Length: 517
Image 1 (cartoon, rainbow, N blue to C red):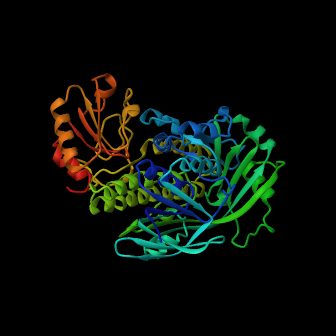
Image 2: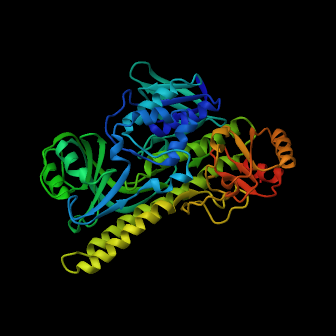
Image 3: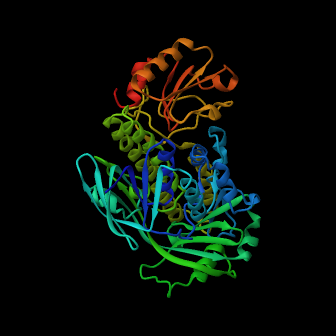
């Protein structure tokens, strides 16, 4: 029976991202993906600046930028319109460039198949990662000190694989989640949706009136505020989501009518793909059962409102990878592995409640209460207020682990709600200053401002005693670094702040950061 340290079930973007992160850390990994080829359906396109930082850590940031198909003049911003796409009322929406200074990378837009292709190329470079495309995991059983997977392949038949840990990255209908008996909670807003991919140069010409925009959301009373959503795939190619009757099929749907209603006029187009999906939100109650974990859509799935899906999946694996490494190499604890679910599950619950569900309900209430046909002044006042709120959403979407049991000095609890500040805060990302990002290592990093020789010596000694990989980044006191409001900052391998201040107890903060606190 073949053995490995970590088996990843599902070789989509999240599974491949996890394999890269673990592989770069020297962990032996087998990726099992049932599909041999990549499905060319555009989704997961809106990649945040934080995801760009993951790409930097995985050595693929420049390759991802090269994979972008949308000409730069169209930008990465969004727009919300009322009534129709060509109507009188519209405002900028989810302009993530507003928070660019708090991250070390740009946000990107590219179809998932190009994203996945680049990830496959990178994972193939790692000798300690084996990818098995065309393999289906049929069953998983506990083996005490490991997990045994029953794997089927049309060519090789059925075989078994033994792993110390299994991570299910196998989508919303996860077999791994079901096998591990990890329950999930469902939220309302069940609607049947169509996903259409089509070509239309005419639509591209019509939308030249909105420079710098690559995705468009149309609100209308007829749709009860549920999104009619357009996104650029590449020049002249689009995807489109909207609600449709429950009995809709590929044969019965009139895509042209749906497009004309959302755009405000008929257009010439060629359909490339039609499919259907259910609008729902599902979140696993916990992301771990002993040696089995789940990540990405297996842990949390939701409608494509705001581009939170694949970005949260990548953050899952960045959180989990270093904790698995720490446990496998002997310096991390079971409590550290528990903190994966403790930190990540509340973040997505907050993402769903504070952003996705709130957007759905706000849009529904707005179109029900306001219309320019009955009270134009009231409509326009509320429309202007909504435009300001969308700017606030970009700033307030700030996932963090404040109050985590493996973070020192934080208050509150893990959440998607925060505020972008230039100061260092326990449980938050450290905003990049000067050249600090380029000097960070893949393990723990102690960032110092000014002369901190005694503290550095204490941290090095304690890290050596615990077996923790520690890199020290000594920064001069500049306008940028003093904005952190901390002369000592301990960064975790995922680059969240584990502790910060002017006087830190090395034994206390390092012990807590690996689950010994």
